[in-house]
Length: 106
Image 1 (cartoon, one colour):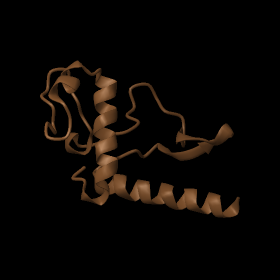
Image 2 (cartoon, helix red, strand yellow; image 1 turned 135 degrees about the horizontal axis):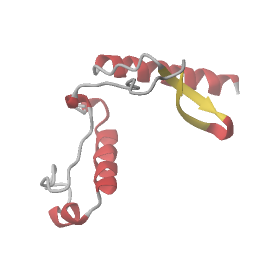
Image 3 (spheres, helix red, strand yellow; image 1 turned 180 degrees about the vertical axis):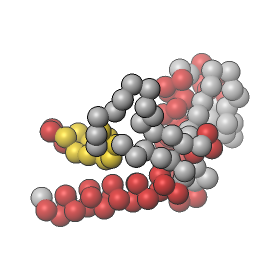
Image 4 (tube, one colour; image 1 turned 90 degrees about the vertical axis):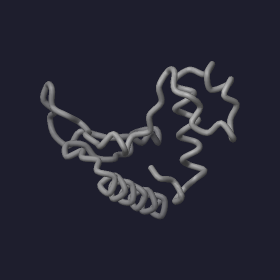
């Protein structure tokens, strides 16, 4: 259990370091573990109306749009891409980034 907690803490540290390198700013929230093994972000203080939770450069965000062409037609059917929902498209882009690992440009 101790080893698992230490590994999670290291993963969170690495994530926050990567996020900072990518220009992500989130001064009032931080990674957290919750009951039932859930992980997410928690507010470190009261967040006021209209206050940003996270800011980042557009180039640091994974983005998809309704009518954009398939960003990797050699790897995925353009017909599938054109008919997929935005959440499916975002999931595909996220999985591709995961497969790219350190070779990812994002």
